[in-house]
Length: 166
Image (cartoon, rainbow, N blue to C red; front, side):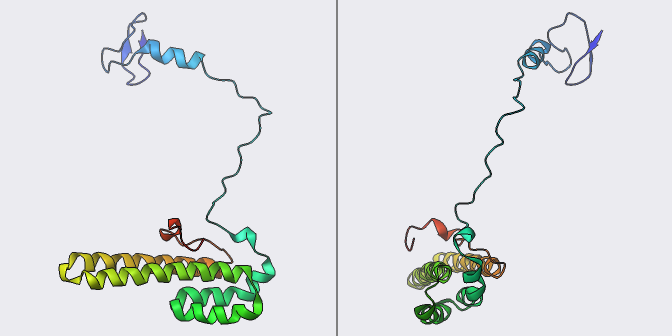
């Protein structure tokens, strides 16, 4: 007598199916014989690269000089963008350019959500939906704030797929 590999019920030695669970013992035996042999010298899989992480594009010096201005962009929206643009006129920083574009993208999305919510406020549901979307974008801004303080440069989640300001 042998046991079913699935439910461990006793089976006849020549049984093809388990009478308890219906498992096919013949199907189970075939895949074991066909397991591929892996080459021990095969190349390791390539590391996964996040296409939205631009940290490697900037020098450590550029990041350390402009990290505070990048954080100000995410905290104070358009006012932070204006301050960063004024500072950018003398610094010419690629790192700061990246965060200014991300801040502008966030500001434009929040502005249009506010306009849509105000115009369609008579329906109430659109105003609530726009407010919820604005909160989501605000949370994404704070994610980018903390990432920028940790010397990371990521595109803002959710709105990074929008095609403007690339």
